[in-house]
Amino acid sequence: MNRVSVPDAGGAMYAFLKVEGYDDSLDLAQRLVRETGLGLAPGRAFGPEGEGWLRWCHATSEEKIADGLTRLQDFLRK
Image 1 (cartoon, helix red, strand yellow):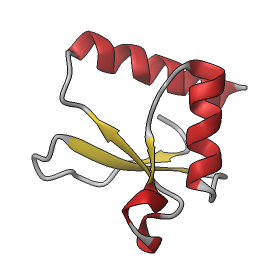
Image 2 (spheres, rainbow, N blue to C red):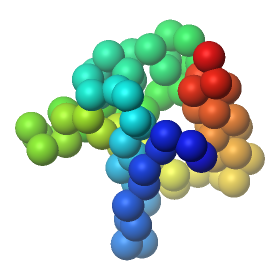
Image 3 (tube, rainbow, N blue to C red):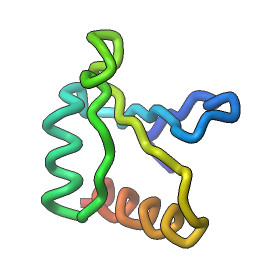
Image 4 (tube, one colour):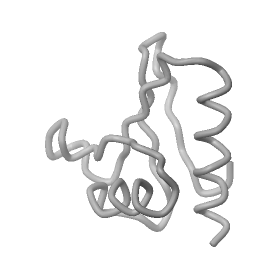
């Protein structure tokens, strides 16, 4: 997905992602919930080094993950 960086999660049940152009993780997380219904944790909740990142738990069905990716992609197209 353009503008999104995701380092290898190393088998964890979550992934951190960074969206180019968004440095405030809380603001971005709140906008995603408000505008798309996609709930991701702001990286700052995991310490100052997490700022600018979002945490996505992918311990769910492939259908829910695909739906979330569609919502994120639609948000970034605006």
